[in-house]
Image (cartoon, rainbow, N blue to C red):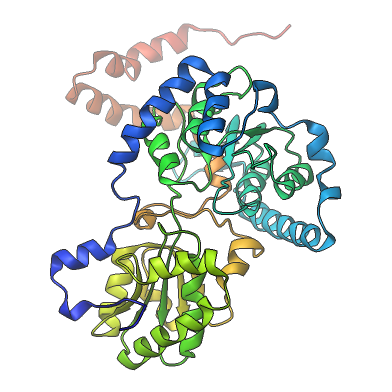
Length: 447
């Protein structure tokens, strides 16, 4: 029996197919119960709750004075890193900055689609944001780039980073270097649900923020859900998930190689190859163990758990049409299209956070250095949500100006609506009362 699960859609009941679409974060009920007391502790005890959580969850003894990383440790972080990772970080920051600068909307646009009226939008940045940089199953400094860079490009006045402390009670050196490179001077050592609570309420040390962004565990997702009335929880970004569509135009080994990428994140990840080719499905399953042998036991064990169970493996569809029906129903965070006809297949795809076309569009390049943010909607929410972008750090205000002629043309219809809906003051505002007030007023004079 193959160690890689093969799920045949043609043999599944509708209930089994629905279960295959589920993620580990679909039901947060058990996490919410665990998170509620953490949130309450942070709300009532502030910094002391954060240091207690550091001891309990991170195994780190620290006092409140250590919650904020000293600016000197941020400024000097490059000295702790070798030249190779420094160069990679500089490349990534440059690429991500360029992409998001190109993505920026016009600050103001106005149109006279309605004669005598100017209508449009004005974009302004939000005041503050907390960028969550996870830790635990590894270091994720790239998440600092993918969240804080678009925030800075968008013009957010206060950008902070929250990240769990390492075993020695410090922040990852690469994360600190990234902060120094992009002009972020606030890093706070708190993670999990307690970090979400800290930026939602504010503590003696950690500032309250308008929004939190970045990937996180189900604990983080549960806290965001519970605190959505206190802080904008940002786009959903839970455990990693990947679909790979593969056909016989690419080697089976390539699909197997990509399948291991997201499955190594952790046992709560999801990763599937979707194909309509039975022979290719078997060849991919046979190729995966060779890549496990190249990964080291820690990551390989995560991948084996995912690919051998309900949350991973190979989905064998009875047809190409059925394969893309499953892909769109799944609405994956990452979708890799491994086919020499990738662009021809693109119109079939409706729901995916990220679509990587062709055999050279490797997931790690997109994750680390290509440009678009790797913070993508998870849990099936790619059917309505989008990748993190400058727009997530901005908001629109509708702008309108009416000339006297436009007012006179449109007021009667507005008055009719107001009367129909029973709003007397609305009707009065667009009646002869307004005309009388304006005709009796004199223009204001300057000094």
